Length: 483
Image 1 (cartoon, rainbow, N blue to C red):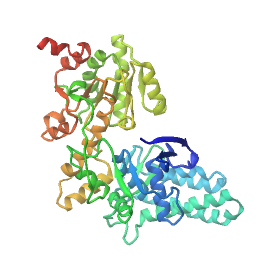
Image 2 (image 1 turned 30 degrees about the vertical axis):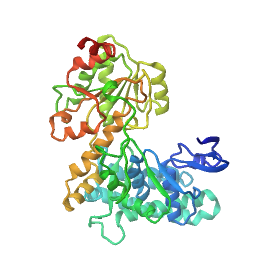
Image 3 (image 1 turned 180 degrees about the vertical axis):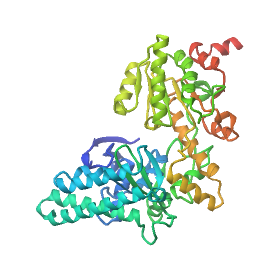
Image 4 (image 1 turned 90 degrees about the vertical axis):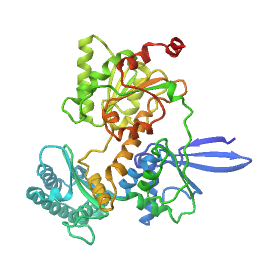
């Protein structure tokens, strides 16, 4: 057995660590031999890869093996680091040059206003078709160039001005590359990089995302002699790893699946309520709350309500508040964004009967064991939003390659995401609970069978009384009566 001797953060970058979560070194001793285990998050690992590619040094020491936990997150992280993003929100950082900043802020606001009031995502081509957007963007590029020249002339005066110039110059370069990708005109679709716009509340983000980030990642490791191990509870779909291997760009890998130690058939009831409307109908979220309410009352709280959008989450929060007022029932309601995720989870565990409403942040990486959580309600199957420009480009590329985008990409991706959300319920062998998936497509659509078969083996029902009885009838009482 390994004896862990010390735990230290001496090698941690602290506040300079990208997306700082965990960076520490553990000393392990066995038979008088000492080895270092460096634990970092995915973002720091890719930051190290990026620095090495740029010839700017390295953050992490050499190693003989790399182990990725929660490896299902790697494709998204790889796309972040191998792509580029620049935002008009950066203007606030140039506070030392008020006149130039004022011009840039005005130009940035005009770019945002030119895309209309609604928040939206769109391919670059669609945005550039709007004459008002193109004119505002040209003005932004011009004012950014003026600021770049001004900062360059003053950069030697201080380290701060030098850093501002470097940041301004990089932003200008990113926008230039976004407008005219190397080797092609702005009108020619890029088969490798997807250029798209994101109109946020007060700013515009210009994204350049690699369509096949997995292939870029695979190039980093193909000539690397180290061992590479990828682990997660949700890498496979019915023990098939082909979707993940394609996502991460690996043509060959040894794969294995180990069954869980949990007895899901005894510990969990999968409940898909009857007579639910189409998930795209206007009153769907209200129907979700109505269906969940009797089960929520039976469980006495202790529930996660997980939504695929913030809009649905906020609507359900208001509906639950009204329902509790009408019925004179009081469960503590916790809402994502009211506090940090850590604080919300601390409150949830402490209260014991709380109802927490969350979106993507609570679908994974959340561990609540014991009686505090006995009900997980999922509003709909987590298919990616159809307005995602990267998804649209990927689907078009798959069609050209003769593949079926829905069955080859969208469906496996939704299965993996659903398994993550469902995995919040059972965290130890003594846990019990109901997993309630409200989306009727799980039963009504031919592909629904493929989805629920990919979940751990659970007893299933469509009857509300069965879900209520799970909490109101003592465990084993029904079996004894049947005997």
